[in-house]
Length: 177
Image 1 (cartoon, rainbow, N blue to C red):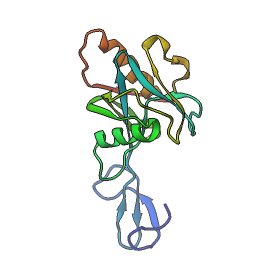
Image 2 (image 1 turned 30 degrees about the vertical axis):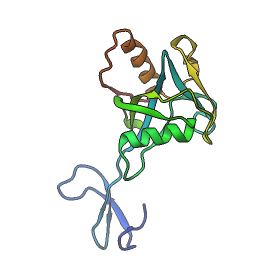
Image 3 (image 1 turned 60 degrees about the vertical axis):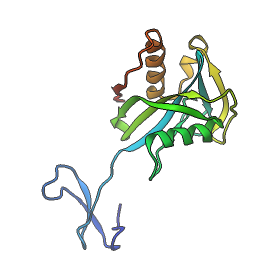
Image 4 (image 1 turned 135 degrees about the vertical axis):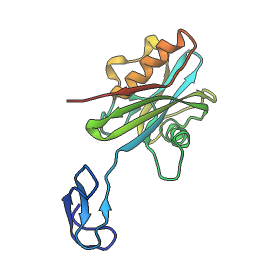
C-alpha cells in the first residue's frame, strides 16, 4: 500500500501507538489501514453415503478436486456464502447447513469454514469454476488429487464421524513451511 484510501496521502509502515503489529498508517490523516485474514466458506454436500466434489477449472490447484468453496462476501453469513459457492461451482442446492470445520491457515492468512449440509437432490453440474462435479463414496474419493489440506482434513473428519453418527465442530491449524 502506497497511498491512503481515505485522503490520498502517502502511508508509512509502522507500529501504531498501543498496537503490536506493523500497519500501514497515513502520514496525513493518521488512518490505520488493517490487513486481516480472508475467510473461505464452503459446504460439505452430502447425499446418502456420498459427498459432492468439484474438479477445479481455475488456479490455484487447477484440475484437482475440492469441496465447493470460495471467499466470503461482505454482507453475507458463513452459511449464505457456503450455499452461494455450492450453487456457483456445482449448480447444486444444499439445506440444513451446520458448522462443521474451522481451519486456520496462517501462512496464507486465511480461515476456511466448512458447513455440513444435505444435497437437496442429485441435480448438479459444473459451474464456471469447475471442470466436473461428482458424488463420491469414501472409497471412490481421489485422495491423492484433493486440492487443499483443509478440504482433505474436512473429508477425513466426516468419514470418521460418520462411523459414530456424531458430528462435532472440528478446529484445525495447518502450518505450511
